[in-house]
Image (cartoon, rainbow, N blue to C red):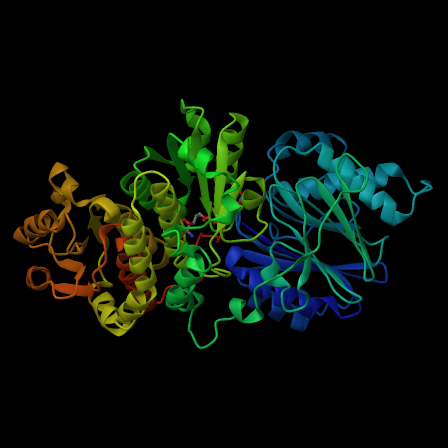
Length: 619
Ligand code: AGP
């Protein structure tokens, strides 16, 4: 997903745009660019690679001006080249545009424009959109009684009416100094309200140091921003209602602080973020969880006869944990499906089904599509998101925020444990209105409140885990294995390892070893077993024996005092005991650190791994 920052105000735009881009760099970092408008002259500077490359270019070739738009790219169409970097110009060279999303009908639009003599310099869908807006602007003709600003707004509107696909855009025209136009459909865009300055940004993290007052634009909104004001209309025309929100996270949330990487900071934040996911939601007097955002009465919750959980990547793994939680604690049939599959699967579902959409960013295109497909079928939907006022959070019928604070590292860490915690609270609430006793509920509340300190004790083993990571960093492949609540954790551990150390890794239910996977075991292939002393501990031990018998090295994640595990494994990481259903909150932490330290040992870019983006708002 790409990052966009726009500015109009009394300051020089370039340094503000670069600072905003740096805060968005986790969203995409193939290339970056800015366009600055100054006294009717447009200056465009763009470069492949990191923001630093662009900043270096701007030092050599400055771009003065008080209005500008900027972009950091995660390539969807076209390879990573300077030419394909945003911003893109229209045919006249007077209009400039940046875009996050996918113009699905870019092909026919390009051909129609080519027939009118347009020539394209890049392979991108975005350049087609720039030419389309420019065409409408020019067709309106300079004889038009409208001001350039009004013409530009209408040109954007006319072009977007022809677009199929998703967009978050910012546009300027040299005829309309001091004006930036923004619009969104399917890709997030926020309007920042400053004193004598206004912003557009893909998310508030880019501008939180300049303003706390924002408007989260809705799909089909078109915003025009000036130094001293803004206006929001809708694509069909007419004013669009909006509300001003106050951003509740601090600038320090989007800074690394004393940590070398955002990912390590976010791993170490988990005692606090897990606490925040529980904060104000535990009721001792009723021995249950209280979740205000569900927008459902107990009677409605009691009538739920099936639950579907959906998400992508790490959110999908959290959904798998949720499946176990809901079945075991609430005795409700539950099913998990990849969001990208769910939206096409056409599941036959009962009337009283509840569909959970899990998404840290709240903007993942496949998860949003799955949510909308559920709603199209009349199913009730609940969103479990981290980003307040994100699209999934806003479009769900209700939901529960994770309160994990901004997660900047591309690899999800604290969002996973926060999602697991929220799902535990959901399962507790559902269980207590069905069959769980007061005693059951009170015992669970005690166990939940003990988790943050148990996470702290695991984090103290970071150096020990680093030593293990260094020992196996040369592996070409790794396997992660676990059972029941720890099968999703095995998948999550494999994903962490893959995405930040680029070592091929796979996750499996431990018992699947003998169904083919054991053929892979060699002395060069480490297996990571998540084997706490739970109801399936003995089964895991026998799986470990199978691997050891074939000289496969084993790293064991076990319970403190588990001497049999320690004796069986080449290396082990022992964690505090907890009930099976809370196990993922603890067993995931060593795997996050194992992946992190492996990535550092290999010199990979932990926070911005190759080819990835933090939130995939394109399909
Ligand atoms: C996980 O480490 C990845 N960053 C990725 O799989 C991510 O979990 C997935 O893209 C879903 O993102 P979301 O939670 O924002 O929807």
